Image (cartoon, rainbow, N blue to C red):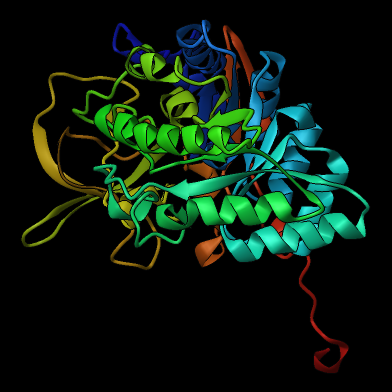
Length: 419
């Protein structure tokens, strides 16, 4: 459920007409609903309230520091994958003891920064990384808390680009080497093994992959605990899907009901890493119609947002519903491609989409754009990145201003030899 609803024929975010936000900040722009963020976070908190747990929000989905502050104030932690995300999380007020550091390519500088920040733990992705963390921790005279990320080789039944739990994936340690790697980690002088981690993919719409992968991990934890390992944390990752079109993904309570009986066999603090399921439907991208164009076999709606603003349709052929900000049921329905100004044939927000006819200047809302929207945006074609706005009740808060042309040149110089 989200808080972008029509009142009469006009689309609102909470108590604010979307049109009014665009009048204030221009188009295109991202708009997020505070109420939806809070509700989606608490859906996890309430579903797992009977189990000691930590919700570590996957920052890669949306890392705006205002969004992070909203979640941090509710007690949320963070799943980080870079030094930059660690910096953002700290600035937003997330407790370092609620942070887990994932990702296959942590640099020495990032490892040092995380250790000095006293994060909860690293999710270790490879034997080489384990050794590197041990070396960096030793140089600092510290011990690094780690969970080994095990690849359970389970098909998450999602897009191949966001599948992470198959044996051909770059993520995690092979399950057939798990025991050996835990033994090695246990012997390293600057490593403290505290947990087991798994994450099989994103935008999962079925419970079975969660259950099947968890059973494999629980079997491993049983063996480890029998060998005397003090496994304190079980990190089940994230990946719960959202509704973009006609999907019917499970609710967090469905996940809790499915896995809670399995968790009763162990005594571990549960960690979850939801991202998309918290912010995805809490945001929209609003864009303005520039032109309508009829080609020989296609009809195009050309808008001012592009693949540099929202990459998912071009990258994954992902579906996002597109709704008029002002409904008009009297106009005809056409089959159109909604495309942007970028000089690429892959620059589209929708293909062969049945939509009510729109005219120049009309506003369209690209739905379910709160996750992997702005965070994947770029300045391709030297396009300034768009503003982000947070709506709370009747309040409109600009949480990132629109970039200027001058911003595009920040950090660039012309050498004196070319002056």
